Length: 620
Ligand code: ADP
Ligand code: MG
Image 1 (cartoon, rainbow, N blue to C red):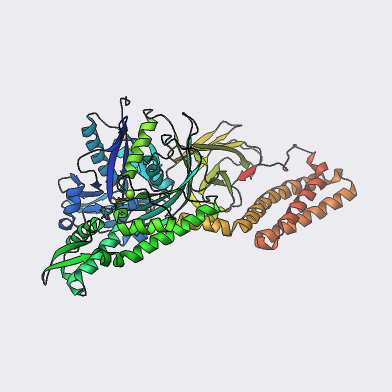
Image 2: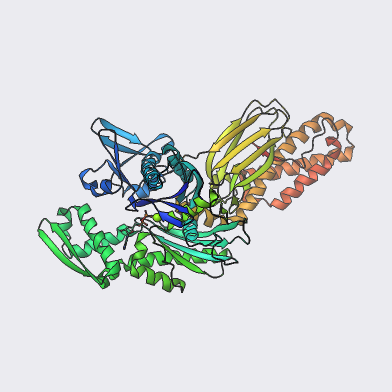
């Protein structure tokens, strides 16, 4: 029996979206024509048209027909710059550089967010699901690419909320594809860890993900899905194959392209492409300004034309495999084909050859993600017994400490949901407000990571530096959304931040941040250490210096000389570290700080007993 409020699975794709549901009979796609093109047309009346009809008549309504909006979700205009060149509608800058779509309507331009556009697609899927199931659907699992960061996931959640859906879980697309094949769902009867490659060639994007699946060992236990590596190209997909075919159709008469209706031509090219997935030849009929043209295209011609595109995807596969093997993936056990373009025989052949495995194609490649999301939905609603799905955090999350280093609270690849708590204190006497800046990334310094947001904890009663006890908690919920809270224990003051970051990272950035963290690991660690030493030594010197002035009369003469020498020594290292940290030996710096600490023992017993030796991380 399914629960009273069904949880559907939604694949919110760049090109096509679909909704599926899973009950005792297994997962199935809902609605007659399963695929809903992710296209929205805004009408003058204030209404909207979603799906096939919007896609088919896009040429008639340029500017107000919005496609590929997924490329803008949770992104800033700056981040999305590369995508913008290809979008046939106007993207404008919203608050905080967020991307907004400007739709020209009779009454004047209307500005909408990518979340709103996506919500219209989701609303249409929600309606078709409600109709098919004969009950109001209000809960869904929605999939996103594995490389989507917090901001992009949050934007997807927001789109769901705007559509009146309770988004019970955001799931990675490759994870959903694996679930659709029963991998990790505890129904295959297999045990032991498996490495799965998910090759996803859609309309405009290519993603390759390598997952490690540790299946549940017993009923009620947890399957673990870990994304070991992702690679791909956000500007490579079925559209490029259409363009290659258009060139074939036009032959050596590129002039005629200028006169032809590009969109109609692409539609014809796409239908030829589909035919060539099943047949050896297909005929394209197009009307050009020079008259009607009939061109017969063979599969061999077509394959020659798209070969460079496919080779590029294989290159990405090699990279992903090598990244995954650096993380312990010995051999790929299976390859799952996802995305409509993987119906192309050449794609299957080349992927099979590259991995030395027959690719999994039993489930429709353009439905597999939605079906897997539905399986996840049924697991969550309790109607499928077995595994609980876990995903991982793609990049570490932390907080900036004084001096600009990042204290990482949750490290990358932690399973979600994840919770971490750490204590911090202040760096200045009588500080009544603390700024908390949240960062994401692998590098040690905040400047090299990405700022996700910041907030202030105010109204702390004045206390000497190091005395306030600030407890900071990071909580990443099961959809990867981050909540940060801070609590000053002595005063009871609290503040919290839900990280709804302004915009997201591109995959290239995630890749780059990860690569750089390897390249810079050693240097970064030294720098982090020196930055902490600078912050703590400065405090020591200030505190000890003050007390030295005041109480030196109580010291033995030789202790006084020794202490003065240690102060001078640490001060000179500190100054050098401030101007040129690379010229400073971190170990020597540390020793000098400890020597001062020891020499000032006697002083430390005077006045308030405050140890700086075990001082917690301090915030600016
Ligand atoms: P997305 O994940 O980007 O929303 P899809 O997985 O739905 O995209 O894939 C859409 C792409 O698949 C389009 O380029 C479409 O032309 C292509 N496609 C669909 N069916 C076939 C087929 N039979 N042969 C080749 N390509 C196909
Ligand atoms: Mg897809």
